[in-house]
Image (cartoon, rainbow, N blue to C red; front, side):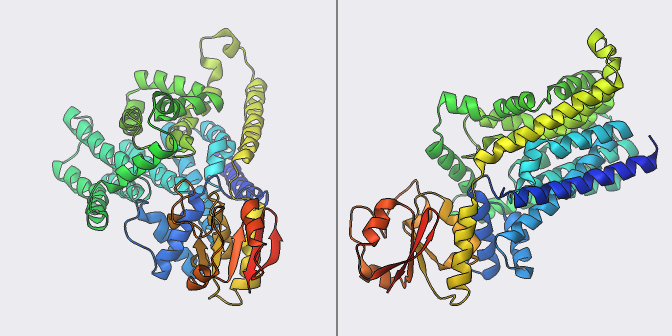
Length: 488
């Protein structure tokens, strides 16, 4: 394959990714959790100066989307544009990483096609979570790390350190990559496989530890505990999943990795990676960093610590994506393996297998529809509130029932999240305390007026029935499962 043909094909694949994102947006694929809306509201409050200190979410996403909202104040659309951009950048970085490892046009094309339809990559580049931003910095750091190994140019290692340092602003796993990056350089120096000065390693160490040190100090000052972020994550996981043998067995990094490794047909890449790791010293050097980063994360997760409360498959998906180049290598060199069924497989047979896998991926992507969390109904409800009430009078307050996390999506779609008063303190539907409106008591007009509430949004039939018994509450609009009432 010529370089020109390769570049044209890669360009077509990249544009196909953009089209895929647009298709998913118009198909109503907005989120897979409540975190997307929660993080968007946090970014909105940061840029408006109303954000309370002490969040355990790392600040890069908040600052990035806050700045984007400053230029285009649409809480629903702007974060999705930002994440689509980073999904595109992460995909390009992945292509560069594949080519830096194998330097083979055909392998890079195979890997790009597989990654284009790889279900979890598609999902995570469509919803405004932190993963695509994190993937971009990790892939970029690895690209520069491999280029340093290939060309021995010290500038690459400095840029690589910067990428890993930036990843530590995005996700806590970036801290592990940053630490392992320095450990890898120390190992190379001790084994004398690379020519590195101690002063260089020391300087790079200062770059990658700067933010984690700051974050420990910040947590100590705002929450009174330097490890507040870690204990908070563990407490939430224990509340939602429970620290039991079976929950840990199901949700730990290794189990989730192996599950998707098999489900998404990454195991040829895993087998080939093991084969090349044992036989090729260059692959061992390249793999040293991501492999060493994965081991401590597995060990910590086996204790039930550091795990998310939902969509636990997200945590280990980076390593399955990193195996895609090796899966592509497998398909490109399938006839060279000493196995009669593979040796006799023709080129058309390989392409047919790849096509079947990509079709299978498409069905797997569609299967995520059951996890769609931000519904079209919530978007319509939020936009109705914005266009018919809040744009006309931004001082209006709406009491919204917190029966689950969907109230966050309505608040985001309205573009006025601070105009909502939650029916329970804290807004966590799993911790019901100090209810403003409840099944067991009357609706208190005096309390509502004290809170300057003008409208009530209810979802539960019992609460709707209770509201409609009051002559000072008027039904204004039915919005699918939600009903909007006006206090008159």
